[in-house]
View: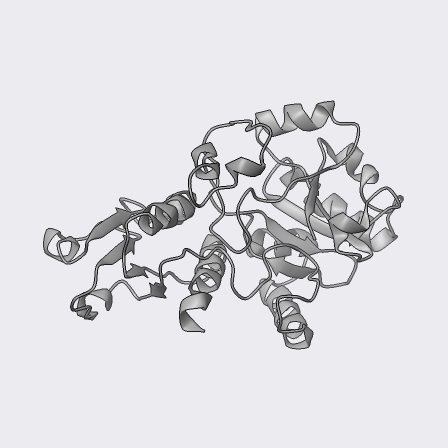
Length: 289
């Protein structure tokens, strides 16, 4: 399924079943102040939405982006605009217009590139399914789980538990339709093998006769950096907003270095760290399989 985008809360009715049931209405009211922003909701769709957008399912994912260029475009659209990330299937999401070009891009399939500059957050939107007493977190993203849970009046662990139970019931193959994008086991993957390491243990990693790159969340010492063929430092202080902002671009640059392996730092999966680790685990799944 794809995410559809609208210009305002008033135009949610262009995509979802309207009026929504009382529970969905109240849940939308609780989170509507997070729009425009990196939040996507999954609700029952209306008849205007094509099966091609929803993978034949009865629900649709919809959001209101915060970027002024996107909002200007959507304001001129008389319909919800289905817009997936502009990347090859399972490859690293683009965060710059230049990522659409070259051997890993999709330039040959495009009629036009509308360049709005670098993506603000770097990781995709948080996706939550409404309509149950405990909304389901389908994809962690730029809006922290704790912020959503507070607005819904529930504990974050309750949403995580609901998500864990859904994963246990969900089919494990990538061909079965999912409720939202970004739920495949293998996703956001560079072509170069990627291994996740704890920052404090990375100094002990042995890689004789290999060209290895390192993505670090904080600066490395000169001696440590010198062990690697290429190094990307995502933040001067370990700020997770900076890490998220630079992560996908760093993965793409590393993938252009002709490396044998990429080592990438990890973080505690809390707040924005939950989204970062979700992306990294999916990006490393091809290496682990």
